[in-house]
Length: 302
Ligand code: FDA
Image 1 (cartoon, rainbow, N blue to C red):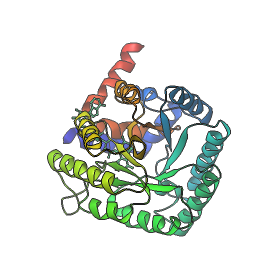
Image 2 (tube, rainbow, N blue to C red):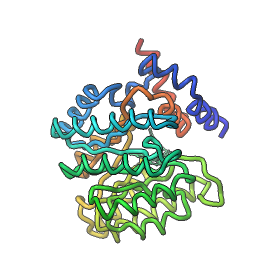
Image 3 (spheres, rainbow, N blue to C red):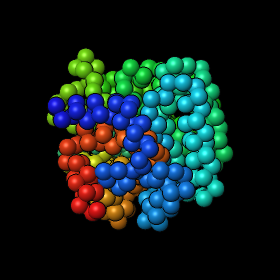
């Protein structure tokens, strides 16, 4: 637990984040970040597409607390959408509403979201709204509830560590949904705490969703036990492979990416890109101490 808190603390340190931005991708971050800029990320996506892997692209951006910063992030996201459309890539965007101003001006964040959905809808590109800490969830959902009537290309993420996950899955049968365990530190008034309880609820939610969905379900996990259980479940219930996909983060468990594609499953990789890599990288280390391997390997390579 202490280990987790150390890396979460580092991820939230503004000075370290600013310093890391200046030095570029260090400590093995290169292997888990798709590129520092749009052209490099386009090349990464092309390579994955050539292997039959789709991509969902995330613009890295932390500490967005003014309109000036949010505007900058919005432009990067719109430019990335342009690049995906121009290069005809098999890719869509994952966005965070806190990056668009959610925490300081909801109306402004909504305007930004609409701009993104409108541009993406020209090629029917999906826009996934990532879920963040619980304190932002009600606002995220009320914005989704508003735009889902205007745009068919919007979807979101259900964090299955939340007691509310089941209710949310029932609420959105028609949206494309990504199901995850959940990455934030939440207390026991709102979320399961033990690994066993979280895993159990995650599996239960995936099964419930797969049996009731009218849109694609993205099963986003690196957990081979859960992936194997779901593979068996879809076989037993004759669920078409085009109704769901597996998702993993870029650079993690890459041997499994290829294996899932070879077995004929739809597979999509989540690719973060940009200069603001430090907090993302620290959160991955907090999530799984073994990811320190990446840091060690980066020194050995030199
Ligand atoms: P978990 O960390 O629970 O590990 C389970 C087991 O899997 C381990 O014991 C190990 O055996 C194996 N394993 C895991 N990682 C491994 C590795 N790198 N190498 C080898 N074995 C490994 N969260 C959120 O709150 N909001 C969001 O919007 C998103 N979005 C999102 C998109 C995508 C594509 C992914 C993959 C994840 C997210 N998440 C997220 C994060 C998610 O909630 C969760 O925190 C992480 O995926 C970690 O949980 P896992 O199920 O992947 O494995």
